[in-house]
Amino acid sequence: MNQHPVWPFVDEHSPRFHALSDAVWAVPETCYGEHASVALHIAELEHQGFRITRNVAGIPTAVSGEWGDEGPVIAFLGEYDALAGLSQEADMAEPKPLEAGANGHGCGHNMLGSAAMLAATAVRDWLAETDTKARVRYVGCPAEEGGSAKTFMVKEGVFDDVDIAITWHPAAFANVMRSSSLAAARLDFTFTGRASHAAASPHLGRSALDAVELMNVGVNYMREHMSDQARIHYAYIDAGGISPNVVQAAAKVRYVVREPRTRAMMALIERVKKVAEGAAMMSETEMDCQLVTVASERVMAESGVRVV
Ligand SMILES: [Zn+2]
Image (spheres, rainbow, N blue to C red):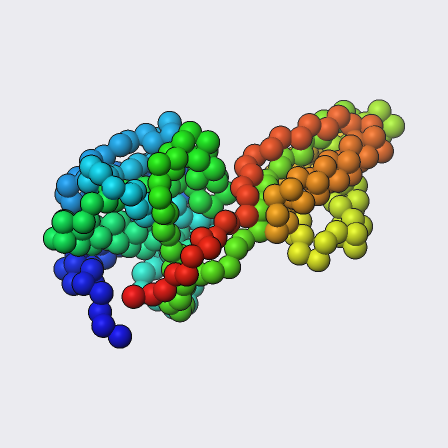
């Protein structure tokens, strides 16, 4: 297969972007806290001569860099957020935290943003050399893990003029991803009850922790009656404290609800809410439901895509 003429530009720029990837690896930051990481990305965009927009969609750790004045907008989407608890020494295939419990780039987003910007830079060079009219935009998107920043950026119209958006994710193999993804929503259910001494006056207490447990039992029974492809998982955000002898007055559980299509996900969320309401009724507590993030399934391009 003949090599596409863009590849020499990729090779030429690679060393700087390997260095950017290593620099982001060294400052792992999570979910909207990527201040050092975005500063590194901004510095490289400046070095490469892109026109920079900071604070994209009002998000301090989002950035975009653009080149070109006319033609279609080719966007390369990058990420640079890390994950909690994945601190890891570089160049090692076994777990070896630099600092136990600290953040780390186990998901490879240090490479993701860097290589997306490398692609934007190489395409920019090829467009310039061939005098091809197009605009190239690198969009640095924060909080892919748990923050759904792109959905807020979509809401603010960041991608309205984009003709094609290209992204990638590090993996153990190279191919073009043609699969979609599940639509996903995060919801926090907060239950409020009444504290009391669990031995001296248990009859006066109304347990928010009981409510969370009843909700989980209810949702777990619901699993038999959901679609095969639906996914529901939960984690305790606040179990109400560490004292078994105090009736827990407050407790919070975070749910993730997924379905292949957004409409079905919204319907499943309503069923989960009913279970939460039932748990509140049973435990005589109050329930509040807060939607944290929501994202539709990935919409794939219909046209054929190939690796060059
Ligand atoms: Zn990832």
